[in-house]
Image (cartoon, rainbow, N blue to C red; front, side, top):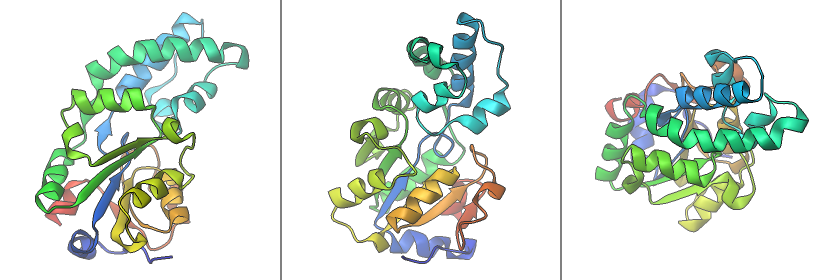
Length: 225
């Protein structure tokens, strides 16, 4: 397994040595937490459940909307809740989803430097595309792959391995950027280097077991580093 980058001083080495940058979506490139909270609490109100805090919602996302809904509803209500949630979520994403600081600058920087850019998301494809189109960033990606397309969610490495195979790359040519412990686990299982960005669903304390990782506060650190 390749060693992880361990210092922000190696950011430029990261840029120079990698051919493909694979990104997670929520919490990494995009902030859609308000949209998720809005749709969840709308659904809970419809089914006579009490409101859930923004903090709890933020901590619970990232594993696909089916697993997300399962965490907040009784078994008998899950199917109905998922249907209500998804219908409402399309409108909520259009209203609340926004780019994270530095996301557009980084995508432009990578394109200018002729890097391959891919997206690996646990979000259903329909919502992923809605977000990318709404924020006008779909054009930057050479490949977009979502968990529901391959019936496999991170932390399984399948989504990363499929992208790597598509471009016939060596593992050393790859870096994966995400905001959750499951992102680092997926990278570890896929045997590729990873970058963890703070401010998403996982805290730095959640990823202590992943040694020799690079941790950044903002995407800007990658291209301004």
